[in-house]
Image 1: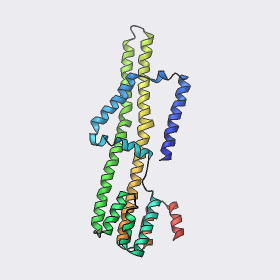
Image 2: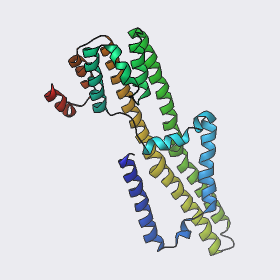
Image 3: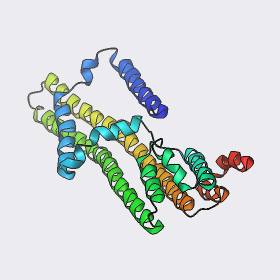
Image 4: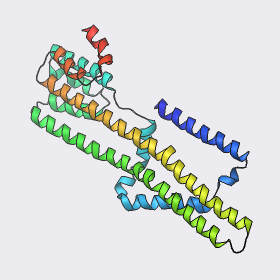
Length: 260
């Protein structure tokens, strides 16, 4: 589980809950507006269905799962793993890696190693794995797009509900019904609050983290690809390690340099 995502979620809910309690003194009903809920959540949902194909929408649970659970390998972990595989291949031959493939949980790396062990041409390995990276990027773009749509349109529908509330408020001025005016003003303000919270406290942070995760996974897969090609070509493990370290930030390289 991604601890940072959990901490951020708890902190955000706690802040909103504390300020809401301080403002309402426990009367949470004042923050409820069925008209605002219908307009903001229903309207945003309609935009999502209009903008995205159903096949992409079926993957929405996976987007949230990826936000809270990140099972991808970090660059440092990839360096260690590829270094171990390179040393074994250099010492015992590339066929010796066949026993290691079953232990590898990353399907991208496992697929690439299988091709290398089977003697597939390096150009074909690279082409196949790069196609996998492109397909992965397309899936990740769909996840980012989903939250971008919410971030973009939720405040807009909050504004629409606000305008509707204001029209109702102005329409009731002739009757001078203070209760009606207050109710319509509450609809206007609460709907704006719904849209703002949905965009800035939910969709925005999740979309941004998914974009960062996508970039990290692309780097990790590029490292794996270069490592597989290096192992297949019979490079010295030190050469393979240097290729991997090219993707790692300077301070994180120190332990590997000292070990060498």
